[in-house]
Length: 243
Length: 269
Ligand SMILES: Nc1ncnc2c1ncn2[C@@H]1O[C@H](COP(=O)(O)OP(=O)(O)OP(=O)(O)O)[C@@H](O)[C@H]1O
Ligand SMILES: [Mg+2]
Image (cartoon, rainbow over all chains, first blue to last red):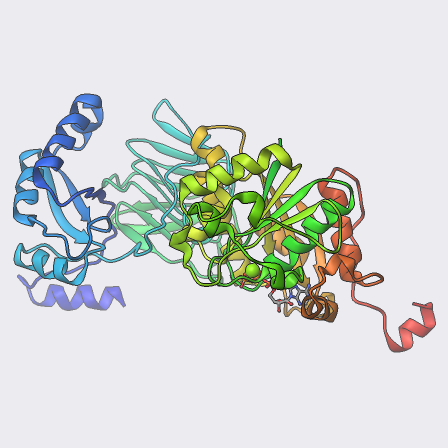
C-alpha cells in the first residue's frame, strides 16, 4: 500500500522518507591486496583509456574482494585512499571473507550482496555492436548474462530470458519476449522507456522506479511499453492511446 | 584435425554421461575415430557407463601432472573399434585440472582423432568451464522441466561468452539441443514441458529427443552404452541423433504417447 504509507508520512511533516531504489554501480575487482600496485594499475588504465577514465570520474564503485584470500593482510585504509585519490568513490565491498567484512566495517563501508558466485559470465555477447550511442545485441541474452548500454540505448533483437538482466542509460528495445530484468534510465533519466514485443519480465525499472509484473497483468504477454510520469511507473500497450 | 564436442547442461543428472557414451559410440560405429573424455573429476561415471572401470590405470589428472603419458591413459573401448576413453580421477577434485594441461591434451588428441567428446560435470563452475572451453560444438542436454531449461539457458550464455571461440572472436560454438528423459504421456498430461515449449525458451536447433526409458538404467548397470541396446527406442533415438549430427535428415520419433489398450487394438498399434 504505497499510497497509505505516503499519506502517513505526509501527516508527520519532517519525518524521514525512506524509499527503495535499484542502482547500478561499477565494480572494481581488486587484483592484489597491495595499495601501491593498485595505484600503478589505475594510472596505467587511465593512460591507456583516458575516455573511460573520464567517464568514471567521481563514480561510486564497489570493491570486489573475491580475488583476495581471506588470510592475506589487506591495507584497506590505504586502498581506499588510493581510490579516492583517483577520484573514485568507494561505497561498499562485496565477496568479502569474514575478516575482511570486519575490516570494511571499521572503515564504515557496507557489505553488499548479490552475485556471490565467482564464475559470473559475460558482459555483452561477442557480436554486440555499439553504434551511434546505441548498443545492438543480435543474440539471445540468457540467464546469468548482463548487458549494459552505458550512455545510450539498448536494442535486443533476440529474447531476454529469465535470469538475464539488461540495463541502459537510455531506452531499452526488445524485439522478442522480455522475460528477465530490464532497467532503463539507470543513471536517472526518467524519460527513458522500455519497449518489448511480449512483456513477461521479472522486473522492469525506469530511473530507479520499478515493478515486478505478474502473469495476471493485463499487458502480460503483450507488446508493451514501460514509462514514467510524475514518479509513477506505467505499463501500457505498444501503439496504444497513451503513446 | 578433430572437432571437439562438449556434452553439457548446467543441471545435474539430466543424462550427460549417458549421452556422451552413446553419442561417442555412435560416431565410432560410423567409422569416425573418436575419444570421449570424462571431465567430472571426483565422480568418475563415464568409465562405468562404458564398462571399462576395471581397466582404468591412469587418468586425465595423471596426464596433466606428468605422471603418465596420454597414450598410457587412453583405454580402448571393448564394444566398438575406433572408440577410446580418457577416464577421470575419483580421488582428486576439480582444481586438479589446469587450463594449460587441458589445452595440451586437446592439442595432442586433435592430431589423432576425428571427434573429441567431452562429458561435462554439472554446474557452471571450473569443471564445466574446462569441459566447454575448447568446444567447436555443444550438445546441451535438457530435460523437459523448467529448472533444467533455465540451467541450459545459463550454460548457453556461458558458452557464448567464455569459450575459446568466444574469447578469440571466432565463429561461435555450434549449439544443439538434445531433449532427454522425454515422457510423451506426461507432456500430454501437462506435467512436463513440450518440445515446442523448450524450443521457444532456448531458441537453438533441436538435435533430437531421447525418450524416458528403463533400458537406460539396464544398459548402465551392464556397462553398455545405450546405443548398443538393440531394438530399444533409446538406442534408435541415439542413432538418429548421431545421423542428424553428421548431416542426415531424420524425422523425430518417440515423441507421441504410445497408443495403448482399446485404441491400440483398434488401430493395430
Ligand atoms: N533417457 C533416459 N531414460 C531413463 N533414465 C535415464 C535416461 N537418461 C539418463 N537416465 C538416468 O538418469 C540418471 C542420470 O544420468 P547421467 O548420469 O547420464 O546424467 P548426468 O547428466 O551425466 O549426471 P551428472 O550431472 O551427475 O553428471 C542415471 O540414473 C541414468 O540412468
Ligand atoms: Mg555425468
